[in-house]
Length: 115
Length: 114
Image 1 (spheres, rainbow over the protein chains, first blue to last red):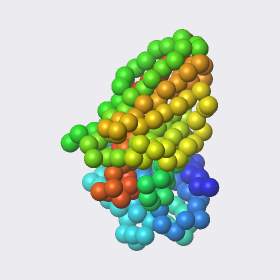
Image 2 (image 1 turned 135 degrees about the horizontal axis):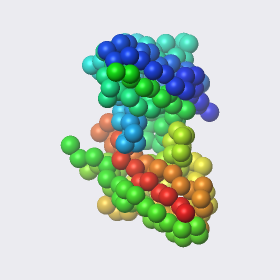
Image 3 (image 1 turned 90 degrees about the vertical axis):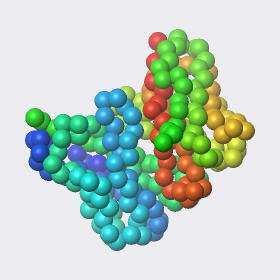
Image 4 (image 1 turned 180 degrees about the vertical axis):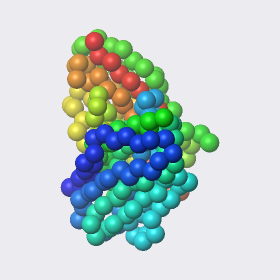
């Protein structure tokens, strides 16, 4: 069974600074997808970034980038130039490819951006 | 772009009552997933449907049932509600065009059981 671990329940960062959220996972699969979801106070689940395990290149989306270390089963999220709107719960998530599979979420990291 | 629609957005019920949550996937998405997120917790998978057939089942109580209809919308039926059923219920959908490799989440239905 797959598991996702986020060892930082809470983090804070000054506005305009950079912060890195950690995530590790456990799987015996070779091909899979990893995601970071953002859940602001509205509790909408928003996809931030997506990484395909068979791709060596780390995914980037504007101010968001990941450091994907497949051998170490590590998938950290870096947020650059943090903005107040980045304040949210961030969930790391895992999914096997294909139609039948569910998303497995980590416990989440609550990020506060301080003005 | 069209998103996943869930209704109602908020629902308040008494213990032992029943509730029905509805999910309308993105057009041309044929697969629907239901998740439950308790207070302060991460979302947990309940059940999924592909082409109107149940495709996978997670930690869904026997008091809950769900189905997917011919227009691909899905309903989650919850009976004999308990206080512990108070949660945010997400529906997500995926499509063959994206190889089912990404799930798009709806805004959620917040269920409160009193």
